[in-house]
Image 1 (tube, rainbow, N blue to C red):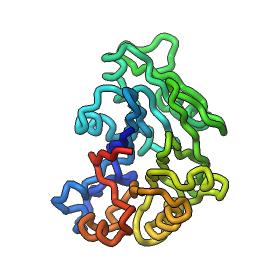
Image 2: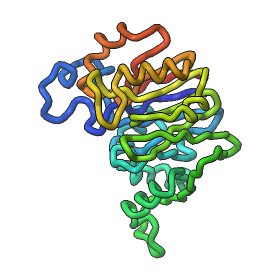
Image 3: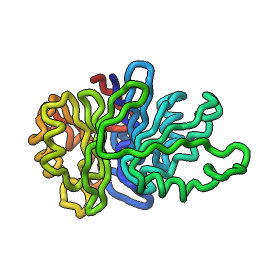
Length: 253
């Protein structure tokens, strides 16, 4: 099993347009962050988590030509804005893209990409099959996936546990009952926006507290803003089993 970090940045990405800060002007490729997304590879299957507006570039950068399904964490545009870019995958495989999410999230996708659901569709439109996630584990081609209920400010969103790995982004609160589902896993991915507290995302201190509660063997931070600081400065300050993720990083599980 492998996770490939396709994007590890916030809704604005890094560099931020017009920002003169040291991070946004860094020449270190680990400081250049597309919008948050990841690819989970289990055997011959590729499961994409989120499809933001940088999806086309992410697939090209990582030479990805196969995606078997997409798990949506929530409906914000930095997580759904690239769904039209699954069209080449439709064309190559001649298969409908399977998309999984909460009913509310799928309703937004159906509205935003209405042209993909028309009875008489425009030729070349993307092909989507929307699959509702409820509060229970489900399978994709015999791969067991457990949704993790979290909150993004007041918005209920999902993280995902796949085998002994969990992926959580945009969280600002995780209930103890959901924390208990993740205890002592092998690998945890979790958002850490910056040092200063934020109203709808964990900051670094809060992310480290959650990691300590879950007690994974390894943890990777994602959804990182330019306000966090440069990779070369922040990474050495983290505990030995906690790492800053960066775009293109591949981790075996």
